[in-house]
Image 1: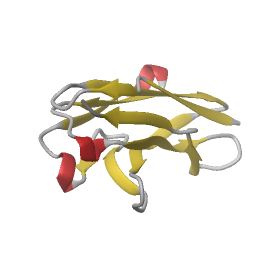
Image 2: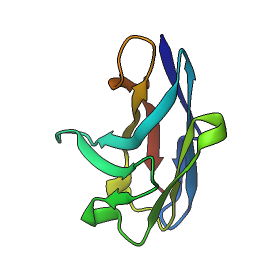
Image 3: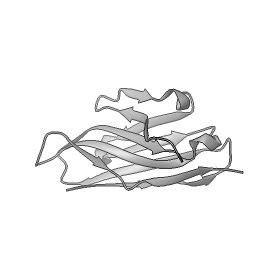
Image 4: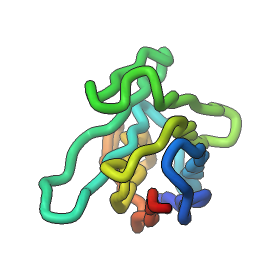
Length: 120
């Protein structure tokens, strides 16, 4: 089985920065795409950023120029560098990974979620 563990969340002031990390571990042959999603209070869950195995990236318009997604294939870890944070970035952030394992060539896994709060 596969586990995704997020870290790096917390409270930060507007204009500040935060770096989220998510490590995938377990029965992994390889990791395909990895992504960060978030759910803001009262809103639907949205895809924030995604990075493929070839390191192609996608960002939702609201974070372009402020957030950067990256990955370390050797450790099956994905990062989300968040700069110039604003209160609307406050949300629970979820790590997501498309994993090639012994049971299937592509299987979706989710982390437990981590709180990011942007407030003075």
